[in-house]
Length: 304
View (cartoon, rainbow, N blue to C red):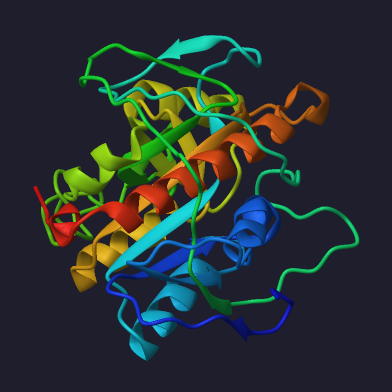
């Protein structure tokens, strides 16, 4: 069984997946599912990595785990803030999307970027398991510009920007690239963004594809929020997404980041957050993706 330390259920599998999250609570329902030994399809082995919160902790945990054993695929999952300025259940304009429906399931709740008081999250905990879900299906639609993202839903982050890596001065923000400290197309960046080139795994998820930003400080300033919206046009923000994209692009490891929207970015009134729905949806989509991967062939991990 899963514990705060390390536990393992081993099998001989053809695909080795590393499932990463900042906190255990965000993916507890998936952990419970993975440890259910009643019915498991062949085709994959899944290891769990709890990185801790923030890009520094995530980068270290990912790099160390990859050094121990190189995965075929890394999945990062968690909840996120949304730049919608809308209420739970409403919609906002977003970028190109792939749409899909999903069922709901029970799951734990936690605030974005934090854990529930009284709980502990071990750093870089690993558990090896193999998943299943009976009868899972997904309907994937075409990519449509100008689609919408609902708060409480789950998205796939197809590109990441390191939003607060730079300096605020003269009423604006100057990025790493504006300061000529790095080139916008210096690997692994493309036009200043960390873009996921693994379109097949993104499509397999059946999730809307959006732009995310990674921040070290959760956005609370109205000035900063508006600058992000006007200059970066993000849909979601997290504290670990950029670490995943950077490490995987550097190491040429297939990856996917999925985020479930729990609240408006900048909104600190927790009564206006939709944490429970976000956690449930995140785990539903995560379990469904793991199941589809078990039936997929190796071509799904190819770039392009």
